[in-house]
Length: 348
Ligand SMILES: Cc1ncc(COP(=O)(O)O)c(C=O)c1O
Image 1 (cartoon, rainbow, N blue to C red):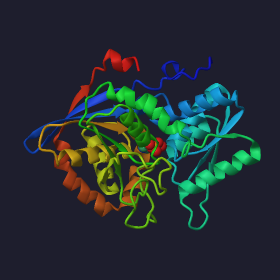
Image 2: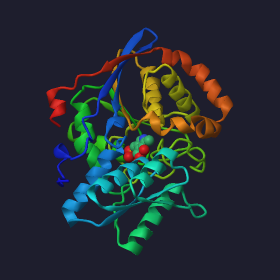
Image 3: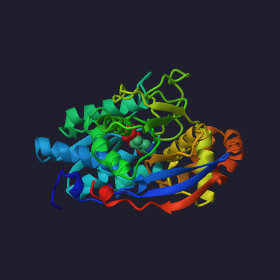
Image 4: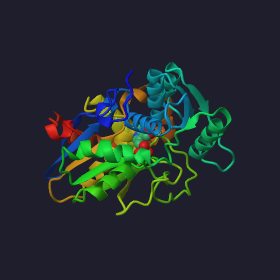
């Protein structure tokens, strides 16, 4: 396969993801909510962009590589494993016991080595992954791509995801999950270079301390992969501070099953948390607004484990109560359909 580091001629079907429009009725106002469908990238998530960008820019800098290693909660590892398989590069993905069955199977199916990092006492699972990935690189000579601290991670979004989205603007606000901070830092850096009125809002559960202090001292386990993070983001410190919205995991799960049952959306769990954050923000507006949500992946990564893993994690009672509360909110959403992206957007 010809090798190129240029985003516009990436040899995989990554980028130019669709935008799906919804009308949202809240009180007397009708708002427009746009979903950036990152699940439509070739390997199924927004992390396809990051995996390609970091790997290709690294090769551009240091020349061909035989093998790479990196830490991942799942989606990035899945994308990196698939890209490396196509390019004939060995890959080791260091994840945690919380990795989804879907991502674990995809990584192994792409011929990569999957290592599950055991945290030491007092160590977060994220820190354990980074530590073990560094140890492996030292031991076997694989190139450590270091997505959680590598500035190429936010740069992928600054130079690729953000210009693609903003070409379909203007937006009153753009929402994404904080997670490890790659997407949000990239969007913040893009906005700094292209000032405008759009507000950037990060959505995370209470147990996350990616950008805010967690009331629990960040000891509670996260229940949804990559929805928030138990480790302070290496990419924190953007100016101006983004808006922060806390969204609980039981509500996220309840909205996920409601959206699915109404065939309104096929986005994944963290993405539904982001949509709920946007609905919460819209409920506080007094004029009709137009907002966009970066929806990181798709429902296929979660559907198999909704009953066995996620509902027990948030508690059946909390889940049922959230469903009753959110049913009218979801009923106020109407799927309009795909937005025609302009020539300007297609040319990014
Ligand atoms: C499900 C999910 N949501 C959101 C994100 C975005 O996280 P970040 O911005 O830290 O890359 C990721 C990244 O792995 C993810 O897997």
